[in-house]
Length: 511
Image 1 (cartoon, rainbow, N blue to C red):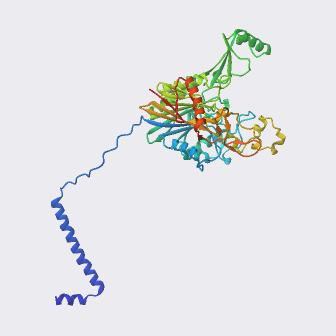
Image 2 (tube, rainbow, N blue to C red; image 1 turned 120 degrees about the vertical axis):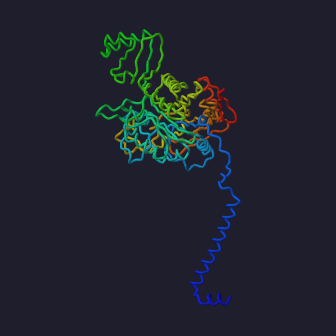
Image 3 (cartoon, rainbow, N blue to C red; image 1 turned 60 degrees about the horizontal axis):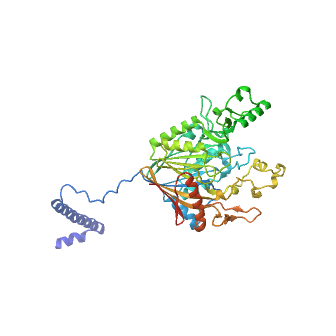
């Protein structure tokens, strides 16, 4: 012991610490080895895989909850809103497996566009919103927007391409327009948790310069919309046909050979080009009627895209914007729309969504799939667009020499529309095994109270001579919701579909 003390006393502090550490390390190492030796004797040689919870049941990719909202003409940002009746709409949109809407305008900043592409034609040929709107639509839960419509070319090629770019930047899939017809017509694909979704979007009723075109050799394709061109046929009785033909001959615009045919036209150049599907014809017949016919080549090309989409996606949306009517717009879609909608379902669409008249046109169940012929509006705020071209003032009869004294608050520079434009629904579709099983309609108003005998505005902006309708959606309640749903019920009945109303919502149950 005395020898040990003498050795320790002869060591300096650093040496002592080092030796102590070595001694302690040896002790610990011995303990670890001893422990491992014990473990080797008590544990099996091959480790046992720890127990794990049961694997969750595989997801059924053929069962989808899909939300559809209407035509969006949104100009004012809305992600700042805290109104419960607005946020309840957002909740419905966000909680779905998939939410689709239709964009009825361009999305572009001021430095992305130059001049409006349309001339003096009225009808608000300048619909555009700031890219913030695309971001807010994504915030609200929108996954996909169809962008083929009669305002796609309001700001020309630049506006059309900026719309695609800004929606994609916000994370929203779009279809129906492109740098050429091949791009505009092809399906757009995007991924959701339930699987891959495809969307094909079409527009009917556009001017010829708005149609996307194919490339040919050194001639590039034309930017524009994916069209289904439509010919309107006016059948008149024999006596009227004879009078029209006589007038055409007397005006020198109808030859004897042309007058000998059942179909004729006395308007020079009215149906030139596109195989006669860019205008109208008269038909010498037995009665008076108006009908519409789709361009067969356009139909075939789009059915081919739908077939591709069916083959390469779990769920297929087909959307068509139809701004053509057979005489006055009413509660029934044109024949051309019905014809193509059913063909789209036959080709593989899971849902067909129509729009263009800014009002509800009913829901048809065709071969266990839903067709909505007209969804109505979702946002109606075109009056708030700040940049209005001179052509629009001229369209409404204003003196162009006084342009510097005019501004958008002048009041009547915007698309015509009545209270019928200010109601629709948030539509929820439940698909089971690729078949529709239930549809729920949550009634929506955009600034009108429909509870009385006559609808009244209840949300306005501004205090000038021309008060502006707020135009953003809210869930309707009480008597107002009941009136909206009763109107939808009557229109659905025209399509052979029964809509039940209870507790402020409408339900279509499919047996």
